[in-house]
Image (cartoon, rainbow, N blue to C red; front, side, top):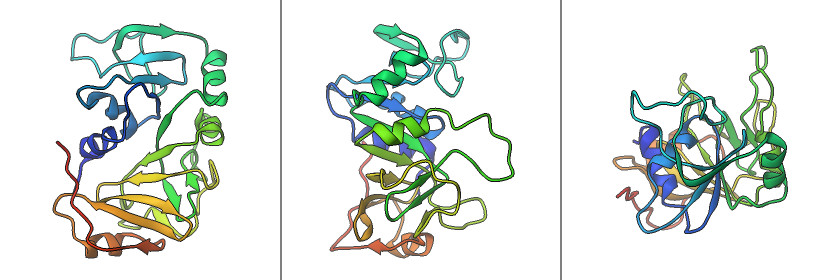
Length: 218
């Protein structure tokens, strides 16, 4: 199965030339480290950065240059900085081609829950609700199961929703799946992962049609 970097590598293959891409906190931030050769992509962060690069090497961090998760980042030539209002104008105006988010749960209808666990302190919902309300192309990066081994790909989300019927694809440590009107359609298996592994780890409706190829991460 994949680790967090493996999930990011597979999602990076979904990037297209000239895309503007928003990276959520967590696993999505790693995608900036794996841009395919031969394409140009602009990464946007809702705290007001356009043109994010990979994470800095140890000792080269600049505490004033951070992403929405408050991690230090690098910037690419021509990067720009702007206020949060301008950043959300870009998001709400649908000027972002691809949004990559982490999640605690995703339902077979494409609902996403990623901002709150009841009973736990949170600072707020962040920018996720604006992103899922505005974005037309959302990929979720997440582990297939929680620490207790229970599926996070569900028939219905049990946690407070961030958005409804908005997720297009999910990449987990086990698989690449597409949200359809019939459930989670399995497109690819992670290296070394069997169909039985994926079936056992998926609570929601799982659609398997024909031979399912193994992911190629190179």
